[in-house]
Length: 552
Image (cartoon, rainbow, N blue to C red; front, side, top):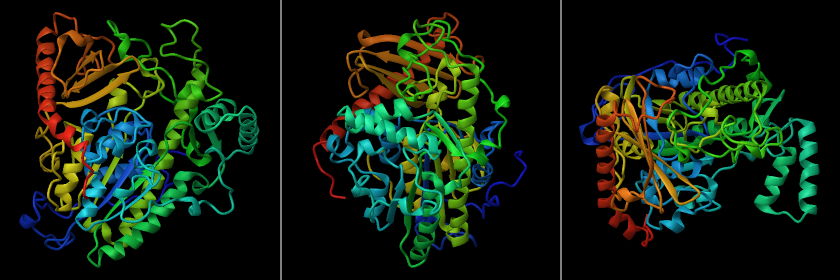
């Protein structure tokens, strides 16, 4: 089967019914297909776990993603968008609160967001306070950062479960797997874990290490797995919300798909879209020249599966490491791309329901992958870094009033919240760290950010701050638990990195110590100092809010 075959839902026709100024509802100009004057826009927010920008619209020649590509064709494709931290919990808190990790103080999980910061306000919570019906399903926040109701202040109805939408004849998955032999192994390992007195996380780790493969190809329907059931729930929910929106109750619907997060599990028909021998192995699989040790992540996730050998970071630079064979690399790549196509179809189902409901004319669609992922580049099979492949993240925003466009200007996930406020026609929520992207959506060459900022911590009280402009990435690693809410202290700098993506897109040489790049390093360092100064100015406000529970 090839990419031209219509294996997915019918592609949605790229639209765009004119342009209207979304800066304020009072200045709105109505189009035939747009909302009536003063009407608030609905918001459909779709977030995908571990989905890097590998869809066709991003220029990936391997991925088969017709539905994502169709959404991009009628919206704005952000080609240089970056996450705040390449880890599920912190990046999702940043997206949904509009705050950098140092202001939310969410750098890891488990770390309950509202216990750390009682005054924090999420995007759905804010819209709920303005009369929106806010509904969540799937993985929106990482559950380790919120309450058992998946952040109850955010939702006007109880958080929804896809459990009743699984295929009634296929049987439920066990540990996310459908193959009978894996289910049998899981049952055996579960009994062994109980016999050893293991509970909760320890039991899950044991079971996964003894029964969980890193990939699965099972000949089952889409809704035999969690994300297929979730798409069915999302489609059904849209139809109900659209009817209520027609009666003056705008909605914010958040749908969180879990693949392509490990394990790479998808129905067989998506594996069949690809030929394993054609999977594109990473071009550069070693450490960069002049590299710094702080830059690298340990494989604390992928090695939890029983079919992955023990690894640290780089097979060619560390002793006693196993090696992922080329065959296994191609299997992992095959699984990742199969998951991408699987999720593309589920996204298509949700978007088709939106179109069928008629609410697409009054709905802003935001599609984001929560961060990138290393598929063998730098010898890495993980996220957890400040390198480009982990920090760069997919973002598409479609507003039926704004013409389609593609932009190469740098943007950040913290920009989503203020942008949604503008497009929804509500006042901007106070004290957000991001900027409104609607001017960029209308004028794609217009710079709205000087840099995008990502960060990642290491176990020994080290934090790396990475700033990315349209050409360079500059990363500074600090010790002694330094955060940007504190004054800059040169004595705490451990190491630095500088990469030139015009000349070195694969990050093969760290130019931080190069004479040739001395001026560039000074310029990028000044930009970092500007960021730190801005964070210092907002630190007192957030320190106060962390002591006050919000009234929303």
